[in-house]
Length: 340
Image (cartoon, rainbow, N blue to C red):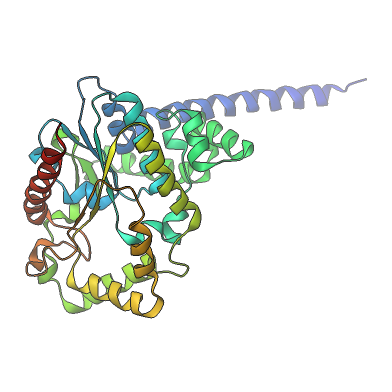
């Protein structure tokens, strides 16, 4: 016979569990509306679905394409669909979505910067933020997740607080909200959305040539540790890159490759790394076999204007404005030649 004490304990445990689940559900809903719905990735991916957006030319890439090209200066038929820190897996998800959603598409611009295949980039295997945007079939083709990984990602997209990283983000944001509520100043975002759905960043006003030498050396050292690793090319990531070209060709979309501007110091590190390993030369040879419609190389375009950079390999706002005019002029020449 069940004792009265056990019944009371079970009742209290049930009430506690139901209360905890209710609070967890409310917190998860709050996470969706407070964080996910205001997240730059979510906002920009969602905006791309707008039927009024029908570009002929779409630009893919990471922070180089995001910040070095000013969307406001581009004609309506161009669309900058790049996002910072993404790698070739997410470039391909964006390319597939573009081809599926936009009948107007004729050209895709992609980055050819050598670090795109580094082991650091290959570690970025998080795809939960694309579950609402890309079909499961595309995610499977690009990421090849196990059933368990896919299940975890789906659960995390519905109940984000089961993820430790999301819980840390939630605690941080709640702390900032409480601080602001009690009269504190709202913390500015390092990256934010400006006009024309254009991402802006806090470093866009920095002038590289005016920075102290020691600060420059630290910046170069950090870049070297992040991008110039051995092995230099992650095979899985490069396979995704090559498969993208077959997909583009199958849909009659032309691909134009771009090397983005880099500082003298960055180019010196790149050259030294190639002398030691031969990796850059080897990758350049592999590029020659790609079915690129055209290649634009801007690595040395601002060798005499280091004041256009904000750091080792990103342009400041002034440099981005000048570069946007240069790349737009070159792209229009290429596209004009291809007109039927």
